[in-house]
Image (cartoon, helix red, strand yellow):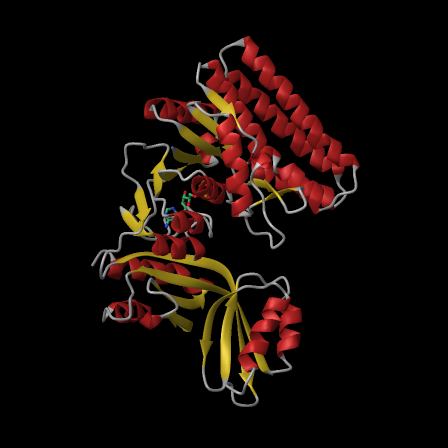
Length: 439
Ligand code: ADP
Ligand code: ASP
Ligand code: MG
């Protein structure tokens, strides 16, 4: 069985929902479909939650009302029979009344997670109703029955595997299985999610759990491009990536994939294919375990990075210095992206600055602390094994006119990363593209 995940734009209008259904008919195979919310909906649900945090139920209700109006219109355009229009309208009325019920309550992250989960619950119900109206053999599975995170807020793969396989055995023999991306329950059974963009992660976790033959991520672009198409003028789809290359690109900002979604597929050895819903005939990108020797494949960029340098008053390698520095970050659950050391100090980069002040205060115990904000990590990905000479020099040479705060190379065989100012980002990405791919 294949897993096919369709993102927000792919189910963003009634017409797109119909195209998704026809892609599934054409495939003729048994498929497991993972859907995102219609594009814009999760943002609106976050907006509603923000108003409720700020104790502004009037504004929250305004957003709910306009969202409901838009959805009721989608019903008219999606279904051709009164029966399915009425069933879906009834379902939507219940959904929007449920959202309104929060406007009178005490508001915490528990309520917020319930609210943001409704986008995927709505889109899957609408698509499944459309498929039923058109005679598909389709079943809707609730992700809340099998997607779960553990006490560390990491997906509980064993639970997901066991639960989903019991459900699939019970529901054996159908042509299409549909479920929600993004949403899950936490270790305490409460509604939670896999963070923004998490439907890709859902698809990969599900693919691994059911031992799928392939995991397909259908989106609004024809595959992983060799540079960020939102920033760089000329970019093009890459036909093949190694799991590790795709994982580095996703982690370092290629928005087409959720940062951690490659991990489960890689672990289970299941290929991931990126496809364009608007252009299904385009070959897309295949991600598998094949290595292409000596080739630089792509560049990605991760924004909102802060660099922190601790210059030790004593010698750096004095026992325990690095441990104490790293433990400070760990104590505030702040992941470090890049590290560079010297005899006198250490530089690190983080993308979550929620606890920056506390971290800096604590680090001052170990030396002089310097902070640089407004930075970004530019990551060059490909076969960068240290035995292949010249590749890292080629990337570094392109950066010769740009102030580079840190460089990281050798952490994996697949990347070299540069920490630069966000204001230099566009120039850096464009020059890397021009030299590495189009010279
Ligand atoms: P979906 O809603 O289907 O999950 P996303 O918006 O999350 O889609 O991801 C697709 C978008 O990712 C593209 O429209 C593109 O702008 C952006 N993107 C960023 N970097 C890349 C890249 N290297 N290759 C392809 N797309 C990229
Ligand atoms: N709907 C969620 C979001 O917008 C999850 C996803 O689309 O992957 O973040
Ligand atoms: Mg996405």
